[in-house]
Length: 399
Image (cartoon, rainbow, N blue to C red):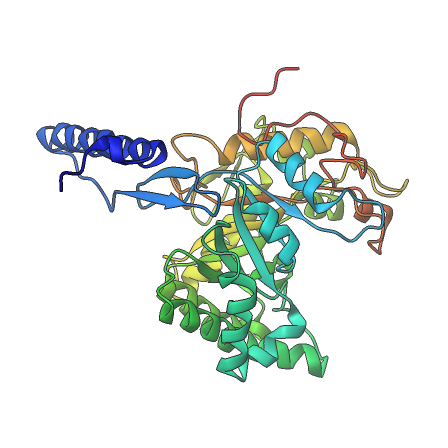
């Protein structure tokens, strides 16, 4: 029996054609590189199908993607539906989204997109997972296997700002259980053969004992014994140290000693670290590098940083100077421009490295507690309209 192309459906023919052309392209490109005596570092072609049979090609160069992400928080009683929220993320050209849980409805909706997804194990779930592999297996089954690979889940963050100075017994227990829980999640993924989902945990800047100058960066001594196992895990699994970093908060604490434009990444001021000799043009790089130096002092200078949260509030009370639309727009546009630059800029201490970054946050969330600014970090108002114009793809903003 003879089988011809006419016996195949159009979809199959299209896929085979694309695969053939892609192979020829890679063959020609590889020949060009070899003739130029250039090295391809871990390059490969991945053909990924999602649940709706869309075909995606991702050329990977061993480096992290520079697509900008957004934190999708839902601490509000007046927010758009999940389906409308996913539409808005696509309109805004978000490359990634970070959830503060693993909501099944949202994960299902994201399966129809090309958005990379980060999900979270809540703080309350950590101890149960740490103490029972079956609990970890069940969590993976419910929150990942029911959606992956149709939904492009790429990171599982275990807990949110778990590491901190505390005397609370429950918080100390969760801190002790953090890395064991991460290990169990990782073990389940590895056993299932899922190698493109990394495991991490977000850490706030208040774990630092010193951040200025950046070369003096050290972790607080009372939590170093918790930081070291985390860094060992991240290095061993080639994952990121996820950092919540807010130049706004540092600037509001020291508005007379820190120039506002320096905090906004406006690039019209510089500072040279006397310890390292490195020159800085913005506060964000300073803060990130203080963590790099702190990790290096513990022997973990190869662990890379990702930004789990950063942003600037567009409104606050009278005592919260600097929280306005103009500053928020400047900061977020400058961060997006920096983090999507090609080639990657990195930081003075780690030049040329991509820093995966999530802007905080998608919406203003009216049920957040604290000062007025806490409810005004959104890129969008609760009705879905933009607070100010921003393009998450990194294209220059035209005023």
